[in-house]
Image 1: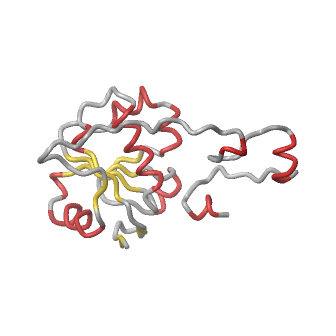
Image 2: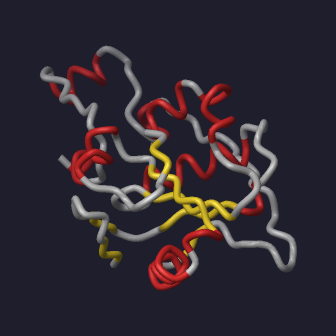
Length: 163
């Protein structure tokens, strides 16, 4: 399943299948025939000149994490199990599902005094947390946050590769 490949853990298959789902009048994701209407896109803050872009590339991420680790905070939004199997030294683990479900509480754990780099395995969960920080409020360092939009793997010893 594609969702599993992207790092999602809570994935299920509706055993009756898509035809039965449609028969029940339930929407499918993101297309007009399914009954899901387009919604206006969320307006993200415009990045002022001199501020950080939304995402960070693999080379810049690698350089910041390895050469200037005291200048950045790494936010690991993978599951607790993924984190336990290997994580970057000093990374803060806030699993994305918990972060979204308990935003008001967990946003307080995201530092505001340093540049914050968010990562997961493929960038999808990291981007979701980035958008929550940028649009849901209660976070004062929105221009100091970036997500890694790349595939990443981390060994038990904290070594990592980014593609």
